[in-house]
Length: 456
Image (cartoon, rainbow, N blue to C red; front, side, top):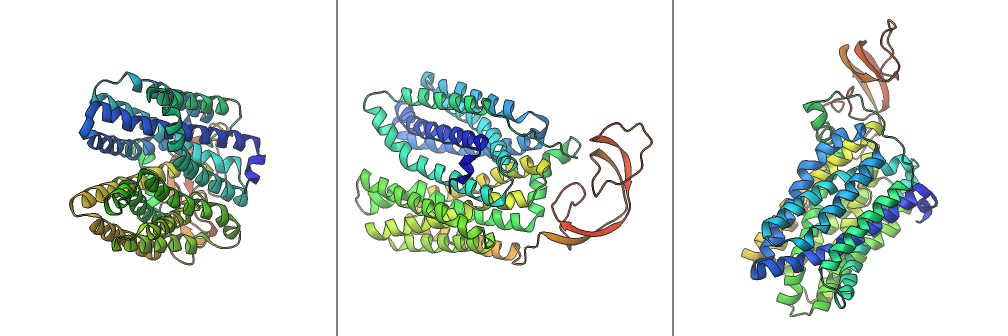
């Protein structure tokens, strides 16, 4: 499980991730307190709007950054975004108006929308071995779950002796530490892609993602995971405090049950993914989420709620832990930033819709209706994943290329065997060239020369 940490570059990146996540968890608590100070009884509206703006930033900014990430030096880009996030979060203690919260949250998460997909796309270049990469994905899942469990407790302890402004300062320091850790290592340079600029480059990640059957299945399962996650995040307090008359400690235990279920899967799953395909485990995750959401509609008692929330954690981790493997398998090295950014944007679009459903239906029609609606969403999404993602998900596919004439940046590989006149310059280079018609078989990935899936 810990074997990827033997790689020094990955180890420092992982520590940077953990430190930054911990700081973000602290500022989440501080933001809630700041919203209450400024808006009092309307604090929930302020936080809900800020959360929506966070998702909008993710959905809108990530594809743009992913399209051009290859043109920027990775290390400098990650450091710059970390320093920018530190600067934005340090402005929070000086906020006096609600609109300032909205502006800072949008800028902060626009930076995160650039940082996170680029960070994620770098890991498979550092750990090219599938087994090591799978364990790195599990470590990342554990880091997120531990942050959800520990950050509120750390924030509570800090608030015993400090004001909540200090939590923002702590978060800024964590971003600086993350930047220093990235500065201390050498990252592999991003491979140049063959795409020209413009609209085609900007939309490539989304188009390639939606053209790949296994990724269409991943998107459907991401919707199921978002439905369950939104139910837990938005409505746990209503289940525990409203329906069951529980305490704040009982609310924390319910969140802990969800995190514990997710962590168990993150620890156990890699050994099975070494020998079995991802699809059955991920579809099982969708089934667990559907079952858990529907069971939550029966107004469970305290013990049953903990078990149901643990089941939702298990289902979420069964989907989210292997997802990076599908992205790695579905992109050339030069196109990974665009595809990871597409997953980041599309999955957070699912979260935006799920948050709205969980909040509005739960608030207007009640928790039973919210559980049934989100359970139906999860069931539909899981069924779509089963239909969209073929069981015989072959890597190598027979396909035919028609005769093509075009002009783009390229190196000479199996698709670029043509004559030169001497003026074209060193590779990679760009000039008009032709491809003769050819039928062959190789690992199939959507790119400039394979714009559609065979048979579609």
